[in-house]
Length: 399
Image 1 (cartoon, rainbow, N blue to C red):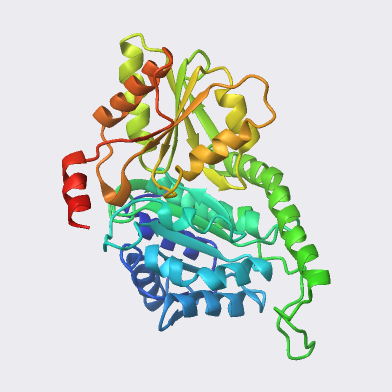
Image 2 (cartoon, one colour):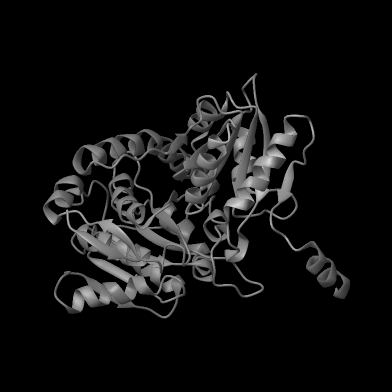
């Protein structure tokens, strides 16, 4: 496999090429603009045989992807933040129509105020839309998870769209060495898209996205729920198949030094690397700390998280998102995962890195110290890390 220096957006563009995607509708938005730019370059150079559709908005981009997928071809697009929010209506349409579209997201903060840097609020805000959600730690993962997303989404037991998130600028615009698979290997891994569902065909007219009365709507939503449950085992199978083919191992949730850990960090996305380095440093000092990394957020890997954290005394969830009025999404779902467990650790939420604020080792050390204090019974359920309290007071004073 050739090694290339690629930005995260370029990794997903090469994944689209390798997956032989036939239709790519897109509207440029920072930090995802490099994806359609690279796609148009690959098509113009004759390296990729596909139809690139520059559209007038993100709403139109996903609508066009639905139309393409409805004909039975592979379709993909990319967006970020406000663009994903503009797609909100269409996200539900894509999943309700069971269209196995794949979308690369440059995870970026939502306005207001206007911010183009990284956090995961945009995709977390769409967790209920019926899309499978993967999150990349590196640009290699961005390429691999995009390919994996196609194979999972197109599985007959699933047939749901999938999005792959990568943190803005930290991954989307930063160059890293990436192993780009050979086309033949990807062809063997993905195969041609199977069409075991009705498609748009003038010879066989059909209705798509029809009006549905209450007696049927709930059943359709239930079928989506069942499909997402099926995705759990399908994702595991595809991860195993990918490892056999390309030698890189993925899992919905992975643990690092968790076996004897009293305190376990839970992270998702690019800030996992900093957490891992912090764990190494603390281990050198004799501290019993570990790390759990989430790669698949939807379907939420509740059993795997419980399995990896149940022996800890404190679970420190680090959320790069916030639901004002309570806490971060990963925290609330981790707590819910322990609903039927008799033995449970103390679970604490740490809000960090919003709007692209740097996530540093000293921030994780602060998280660790607060989690260690919880061993003695001193803790707050929700903690904001690296916030300028004085600046906040000044802003509050002007309202």
